[in-house]
Image (tube, rainbow, N blue to C red; front, top):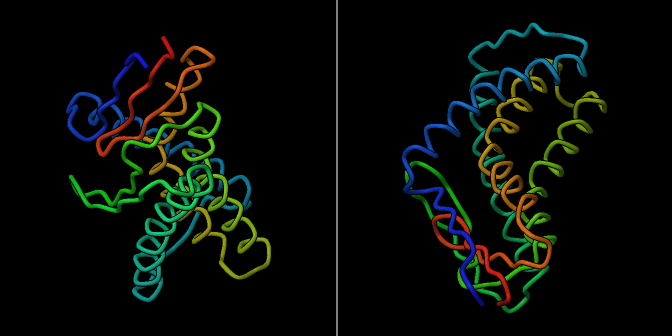
Length: 176
């Protein structure tokens, strides 16, 4: 295998800054999108709502990483999974595990897809109110910007290349 490209999400300050700028823009865009879905752009939070929002954020971040870990295991049952905390971020990795582009795309996209569907189900079932749905949906979606970036890199990578997860990002390999 030959290293084609190395993506370092944890230590590249310029990339981190750019992704944070994109996350703010994405947050505004997802506020609009989820607001359209909810039929409301306004919301108010009292102290109880704010406490529940903070709990929901912590649960959502944890669930997001658990979903990544679950998909790592689905594609590499014998692969090791490691959870960690770095630069203020909770993360999960499957170091030294090699995945096809398609597998890694599923690993990257699955938390956004599944959590968005869960939030939509809770909202349409009347379990969460429109304001909570809009804000939590936008926060989670904006928090997926790093995953979206990795997906973008994968899509632009030649067809039969492989992805190796690393503790700081990913390495992409060609067979030759």
